[in-house]
Amino acid sequence: MGVRKRNSAEKIKEANKALCCAKLRNVPSSPRKMRLVADMVRGMEVFKALGVLKFSNKEAAGKVEKLLRSAIANWEQKNERKAENGELYIETIFVDCAPMLKRLRTAPQGRGYRIRKRSNHVTLFIGTLNNAKKEA
Image (cartoon, rainbow, N blue to C red; front, side, top):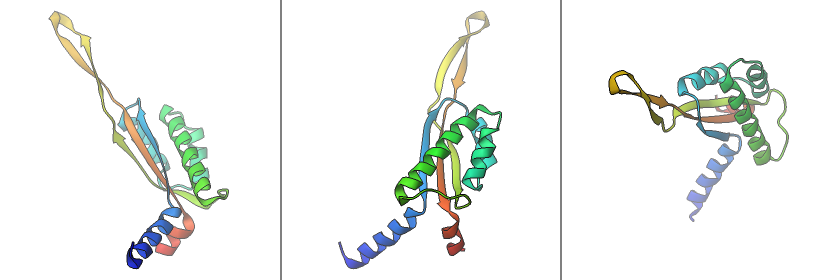
């Protein structure tokens, strides 16, 4: 590996050290319902978001809370220290469609109606506030 390529790789590695990701795949609820919860916590500080999710009535909030705890643990493992209050925030969270289960429901006069059982994938990135201030 050349010097220029190695320096570039080191810069990318250092930039990714502050950013951490967690994914939740094949959640059996519709993406629309999950996006309501994702929009609720987007851009928040992580411990504030955990409080919001804990007291939300939506079923999807419990799943996103578990995902956020996983992302925090990933960040702590990657940086080899504990997360402090006010340091981490949710940089990006998005919900994608997952494969749909298609079922048939009997209908009058020998017909069948299609039932689509939707599922989704949630991806969450957390970053530090210090790096966000440096970039701006």
